[in-house]
Length: 314
Image (cartoon, rainbow, N blue to C red; front, side, top):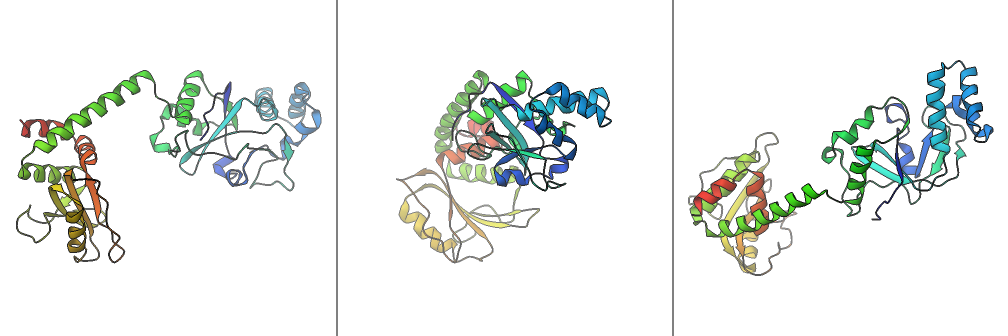
């Protein structure tokens, strides 16, 4: 994905209630209603555009707002990036200069459109989807804007560019590096754990991430160390926990766990894999899930078990 060095960023609402979201699929920006059709015929005479709105019965403040939006939409500046929010994601594009009328426009579409160069994008420069649930409300609050088009504040612009270009500010960069260091040290400590402690770590991690153990812990079940269940979905998973494992071990457990009830997910967790391990082909459309090494450190961090690991690894 390309990065965006831009002079300005504008937000555009895709119709009231998102009724113009089809513009995303058509690859263009839409704006305007039947009340705005006079804009195209006035050739950039914004005073005349304003006066026409007043003549239509708009109060001066409203006429000014409509004129400002029209000017922004008809602006041919190629350095402007446009953003919008729809379908649970942020979308962005750079628009072609030419403004064209939409024939037979109604409630389902605007009065004018501009083609989005390369279409609308919903991913950052690293190809990661710009899901709204990972964006700051300092930016997503634009969804509550009552009109159709607005500029971003300096803070919103900086934030938006960081999201699109997948860049971090110095504090985020430092914290990311610190977390990476923590993860590497935690991997070392996890490998020091006695087997029973490692098994308990995994049990605690499951419990803190929404899984409930429905079996006794280790020792009494053939091929399985614990069976866990999601309280809400009732999804079950059989888990085998190993300190070390090679590919032969993985293949063997894939076959043995694959013989369990077909409704269960099956997983093998290992903190010290021997060689590069891969899950074998699915058995009865069910693949053995592998959780290894760094993933266990991530799981421990996310489950708030760092202090527990430190204490048990002394």
